[in-house]
Image (tube, rainbow, N blue to C red; front, top):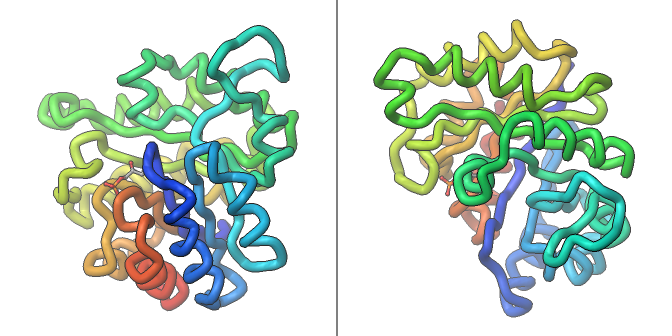
Length: 242
Ligand code: 13P
């Protein structure tokens, strides 16, 4: 069975003053079958690890380098993330594919580095609006999936997140039928049928329950609504109830 996971991606948001949100989240008790994850900016990993110690909340990075260490100014390795308290790392987010020109081959190499450091890789895939309009959604998503997932990826070390680029931060979400179509195709294609499949893109307390009701949606990767414990807590409750 895939594991249920509510994952928050704080992106480039969060100062030490915002640790209060994690403290509030640690107080929310989800059912044991629902994992809760926050991926803060790297500067907050260590203080968050102290707050989350012994709680149900796990932590993740938002990117990692392919190497273990070395002369790569500004980069962070998977081993460093693990050392700071991370259990997961988001890889191939569309913002990194767009802002930093990351290819699926590079994402696969990063996922290999994450696995060697003992991290669970959350590999992101998703089409642009132009690709959807051209009827290329499944082609794009499935080819990103195949090229971004390294050999040795299993349900124990890899999670897939479907994030349509046009739904991120826009308040627009695909229809339930559109989400189901992509998630059903992902389930049929992933190398291990038990891999958790997350949906991401404008997930909010108001739409989480219906999205979690879909057969092949095992959770969400949440941006804006993960920044406040009250909103993210409501999404976690919706996942618990699903
Ligand atoms: P929003 O939830 O803000 O749309 O962001 C989704 C996302 O990109 C999560 O990785």
